[in-house]
Length: 61
Image (cartoon, rainbow, N blue to C red; front, side, top):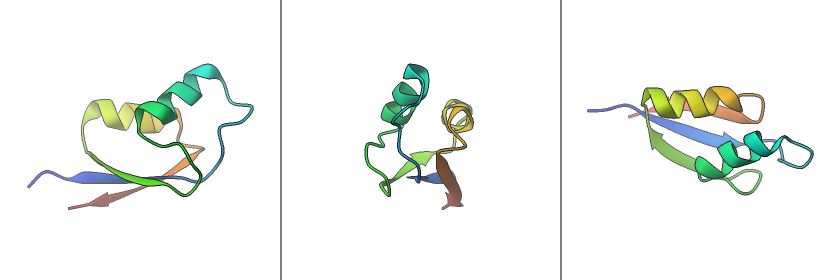
């Protein structure tokens, strides 16, 4: 079974660069505290890495 990533937005996107805002939106996050589950792929890991200071990540099955 493929691993998944549980991604939670913990900091707001006000005063962030347009690229960081777009990355958060691409991940499907729009409010502080919102959590999404995404497949663990290199592309998703790259998106998370770009905004790692705004989100927390857990690996789930």
